[in-house]
Structure formats: C-alpha cells, structure tokens
Picture 1 (spheres, each protein chain N blue to C red):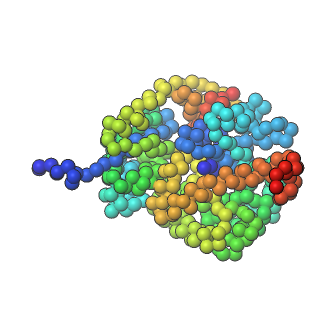
Picture 2: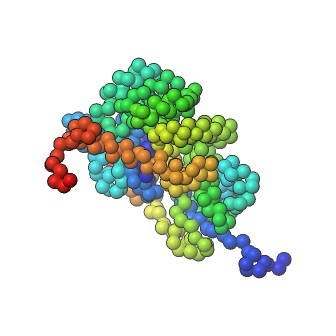
Picture 3: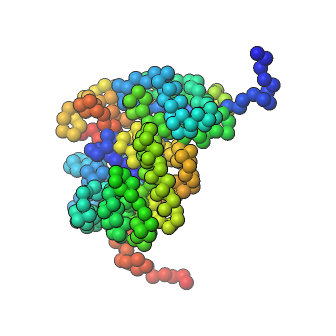
Amino acid sequence: MKHLPKHLRQRWRYLAVGIEAWPDTNISRRAFQRALWYAAGNLLGDAGSADVDLTLLGFTVENGRGEAIVRTRRGHVDAARAAIACVHAIDGDPVGIRVRGISGTVRACEERYMGGASPDPIQRDVAFAGAERSVVVRGDAHDIAIDSDHVGATAFDIE
Amino acid sequence: MYEAVHAYPDGSSTVARHARTAAEQGYDGIVVRTRDAVAVDPERAEPAATAEPNATSVTTLREEYDIDIVDAVEIDVETPASAGGSVGNYRPDRTVVCLVGGDDRLNRFAVEEPRVDVLARPMDGSGDFNHVLAKAARDNRVHVEFDLGPLLRATGGRRVRALSDLRKLHEILTYYDTPYVVSANPRTHLELRAPRDLVAAAAAAGFDPEWIRGGLNTWGNIVERNRERRSGSFIEPGVRRGRYETER
C-alpha cells in the first residue's frame, strides 16, 4: 500500500525502560511484551491499550538485568508510563521496572538513555546473616540467594 | 519525595539496597518501616543499619547514596491495648511511628492517638474508614496512609476491591481535609517505582496527580517536624531554646 503523506503519519514516542530482576531470572522478549500488554489491558482497558500501543522495539536482558525500548503514541505517554509501572512480575518472577526517559526517535532514545553496560556478574560466597551464602555481585549491588528466595543487598551489608 | 519501605528482615532488600535504588529513581529519602532494619540504640550516637556491632551507620549510607534515611517503626499488633504500650515504647526513640490498621478498633485507636504519625493501610482486611475517623485524624494530626501497593501489584478482583476502597478513602480524606501520606509499600527494591511512574499509575487509576505528589511529599514534612521536636532546642510547640530575636 502506498504510504501516508507525512502529516497523516502516526507520531510516536519511544520510552527507554530499565529492567531489573533477581539474577537467575530468565526474561524472554515475548514474555516481556506479553506482560506489557496485559498490564495495559488490565489498567487501561482495550480502548486505552489501543491508545498506548506499547510495542516492544529493542530488548536486551541478561542475567536479570537489561533495558528495552517501548513505543507509544504521541500524547499518550503518561498512560504508557502508568501501564509500564504496573508490570510487577513476568511469568511469576518479580521485576523492577523504570522509565529512564522518552525520545521522539529510536536513535535518540538509544543514544541518550541506553547502553550503560552493567558490569558482568560475579558469583561469590559471602557471610550474611550468620551463614555462608552464594551471592551475585554486580558493581555495588549484591543479590544474595537464601534458600529458594533472594535478598537484595549492597557491599555495605556484607560482613 | 519520600517512599516508606519494608526492609530486610521484614522485606527482601536491605536498607542499603532500598536506599541505592530509591536514590537512582529520584527520591529525596526513604522511611524504613521495619523496626529491626535500623537499630536505634540510645547509647550509640547514631542509628545503624542493623543491630550487628559492626553494622554500617545510617549516616554513612546517607552520604554514600546521597539520600535521606529515616528510622521509623511500624507497630503491628492485634489489639488497641497492646498498641498503646508499643506506641509509648517507640515514640521516644523513633523519628516516625506508624501503626498498622486494617481493623476497625485499631483504626479508631490510631486516629485518636496524637503520638502516632501515620495510620498505615487502614483499608486492609476487615478495616474500614468513615467520617468520624477522618475528623479525629485531622484533629490529632494523624496521617492516614493511601496505599498504592495493590494498584501496582494486585490483579483481578483483589485489585478492583482495593481500588474501590481507595476511591472511598480519597473522598473522605479530601472532604475533611485529613492529613494523608501516599506510599506503594515496597517490600523489595524491585517493587520500588520512581515517583513519576507512581504518580502516572495513580493518575491512570483516576486520582489527582497533584494530590498523590502531595502525599509523597508529606512524609518529608513529618520527618522534618519530628526531627525538630526531638532536637535539643525544642521545648514545646512555640517555645524553643536559642538566641533571642534581634529583629522585630
């Protein structure tokens, strides 16, 4: 089909989204896209979801840390932000999520808000709460495995 | 803007991790609701992150992450009788005293007790809120918490019920001009949401963004007021020790 004249084309906004989860969590692109759409559907309804779009464009998550670019229609950025804030778990695994910034082009979005490569995770054993625990260290962030659960800590909490 | 967090051992992230994440997200401070997460020892000069003897002091964390960390306590008891004792115990040591509601008698007790700063989660469980409580809370300057946790983390019928409770609470609070605070009750650093995201979510649910922002800021006002009251120069409201006024 012939494409639309420029003034009739959809204007988009691109949201840079930071994603964080426990280190053993696997988040696939499909699962994240599904979580976004479910969150929008539940919060804004079908009509609102159509308004915010929330198509996932870029997605890189490794060892429970990463970033994504989410597309939304211009003028619906606040609703998109709201829907993204309501993503609290992906396939049952808790995730932390944060909108880092908004741009008018994918390229500006990448240049400004993405690519702050997080340091590679290091597996170590540390003393915490009176016992030896396995911990994944990423910079200052320490994710400690306790039984089947996790505790988020920092270098300050390690004895 | 402040967020009031549940830290380890009550939640799954330590005070330091909450502070680190909250600072990244643009909060001015965190209020630590968990009693055991910040050890306040009258014999030690300043509160520490845990009761361990070599624990990092809160001041160090404040400087490291450039964010305010407030020692608070959340009193969670069964009956008003035991709540009275706990409030008396913690009030002298802690900057912010919260009492967990969610039960009609506890809600009633909290709003009639001026020593309580915040009535936390009044609509949880069987708890309800009405005009009598709203007026009492206003007169005693007890802040009622507006819990956005279920909006962010619940689904289906539970979320619908929680939101309809929040609607009711919002109407009563605004009508009587009752002081209030807003929090999402995060239990891990993953549940923390940036102030802007939180406000956007509340706005999408139909609450006034300005009102929500006001509730996040109110934590800071409570902290400021209580710090001033606990400082050495404060004697009673309107009376303070210091230099005489040089200008009229």
